[in-house]
Image (cartoon, rainbow over all chains, first blue to last red; front, side, top):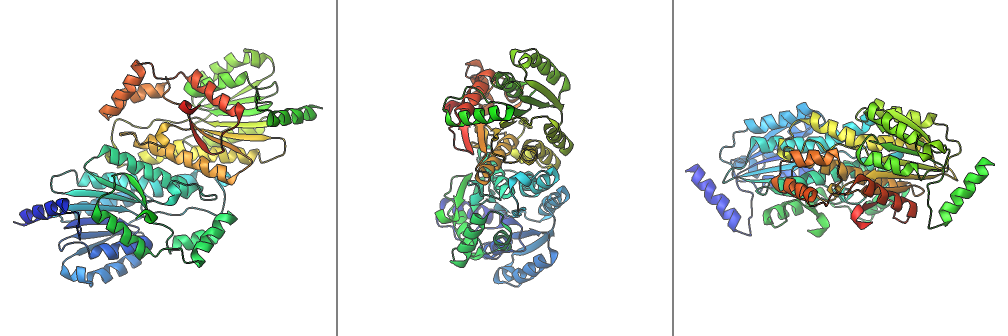
Length: 280
Length: 280
């Protein structure tokens, strides 16, 4: 009986252009302890049916557990949303494997939706120019965390939840304008984001039953933006970030997370697309 | 007197739209033992003035030394072009460092041009889809060889030969259509090439005195294409490569190398551009 009700739900979601929730889902968010990841967790919690599982991943256990506690006591939590935390460092394969393992262990036989938000990322050292990156270890470790882990986590999760009638799978890559436009003194960030976008474009080609989105969330009022404003070597780029900030052109994480979830609910984007918050 | 003649040469190259050679150059080519790298070495040898140094980099010592022997006994070699070999594996930092060290040790006080061709690359495992890349080590080592090494080698060479009046520096990234278009079952190659293009777009932003080109050489009759024809998992992509091959739409390395060198001599491309052989 439970599975029949799931089936109905999935069908009604598919046929309706006005979905108002994500059904009964397993939703995984990396980098969930702060910034956009945390806002996504908070917002999506209210859009998941009871019985859904929200798997929050971050390096920082304290912040993650605080978020978990908030969500458990929220309306969604009391209504039956399960919130699980995985403290993992995605710059190492053990971290990625641990997320996949804990996703597998989640009891989610009744889900009709899988949602993975590849949100975790780092800015890299923006205090210097490309010509100074002579040390391969620095570049390797940046790419490992920002590129390899996104591919391998996605692959692991897709392997754990393979194509099955009645389960809709959606993979989101948190991208950036930097994936498509070069910025002086941001060589790691730009090339890492470009690589990630391409990974998910290839994935969309390969898996027609998946829904894949590269979402550029805009300049957000986060620790990363503070880091960018403080350390960017290129004076012009640095000033333009400061100007955006002082002139109020920086978006809140809540606002951008809301726009992303709206796009996902409407479900009209071409799979593999790069969508900017300003185009929403 | 030698340096005065260099100065004149550099000036005449700069003012003339019809340069027919690259002056007295230090020219570094990675992946030089076969395919496009070898064709570039052979072709550019005839376009370098006596006193130039051609630094050929590859993993395979035998093939590299054969090429060196051929070039030493060629017209350019007998006229005074020096050909040096560096046997190095660019998937490890020791390999990258060894190329930079040997470039530094090259006696090239009289050069008026620096040319670096980042050509070395691998296809990656195309026999499987993105969803199978669960092992971070595989992805890390692919990115290290194909992305990190190109950035770190370029940075090392630019550090060894900093901006100086009278020396024109040009950095070429051998790119691909795959840098801008996703192909099913080629996730490593596509994302690696996308990352590389972005690295060199950022570099072009940062260093206005540099000339930077991302050159997509087209489908070439190389070992890599054979590998692609043989192992590509996606039937449609595999068939289209085979069809290109059987219908004669594959270019020779000589042809594509010739077009690249023509573009570099004409020197009209916007720095940082992605240029496809079919646009030349």
